[in-house]
Amino acid sequence: MNPSESRRRLASSRVARLATLDAAGRPHLVPLVFAMGPDHIYSAVDHKPKRTPLLKRMRNIAANPRVALLADHYDDDWSRLWWVRVDGTAEIIETGPKWERAIAALVDKYPQYRGHPPDGAAIVITIERVAGWAADGRA
Amino acid sequence: MNPSESRRRLASSRVARLATLDAAGRPHLVPLVFAMGPDHIYSAVDHKPKRTPLLKRMRNIAANPRVALLADHYDDDWSRLWWVRVDGTAEIIETGPKWERAIAALVDKYPQYRGHPPDGAAIVITIERVAGWAADGRA
Image 1 (cartoon, rainbow over the protein chains, first blue to last red):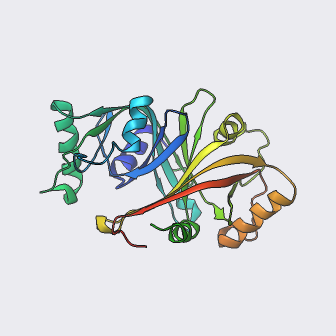
Image 2: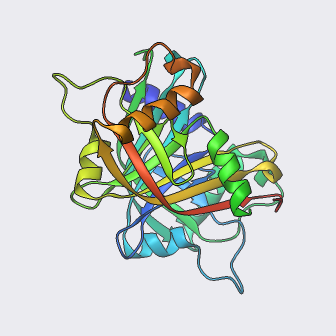
């Protein structure tokens, strides 16, 4: 898939899966809602943890910032399968203009966040590579 | 989510995402169709590579057998979100009874494979842990 079509499909996906590594080097996976800017992927934790420990994805990113993110489309007609993967470097942002940009992008994409914007830490992934594949070979 | 409900939802999912690590310790992600046995997850490569190099997921498993696999359900009604994750150890199986079991499980699950069973290497993941979460707290 060409890069602009890959980015278009990724940006319009409602969900993606984030792969991180824990401190022992084991892979971890979680689905997340996200928004996409030209150079970044944004996600956020809904509410500030008060009594709960930091989410595993956050601890993993603190230990190892290398991440991969995947959006894919499944269809029982396998000629319609496609996926887009991002390789990047993630950071945890808790405040400031970068955090505000992340939250604004998420609220803009998801009506579910309107009136209830996430107020926890944001995950900001700097996009290093976008790869895409479509079974029909299009785009 | 309780373990039996997690396993039930995972087994009936049509697609999952596999996280592997490359030799440099970077995470890699790819969607795949899969079948589930009591202790294993099965996937396979459709056709034996002839001129193409070994798929990256295969090279990664050879370098590091630790994998994670995720199936998730997205819905714009976020009270219906759920996911199931498997942590496990993967091996590449190219022939023999274990390969035959993998192929039989895949053909049994996917009508798309009938008449065209995969004839490439199988990925067999030994399930070490199944974790599940549902937004509605059910099951």
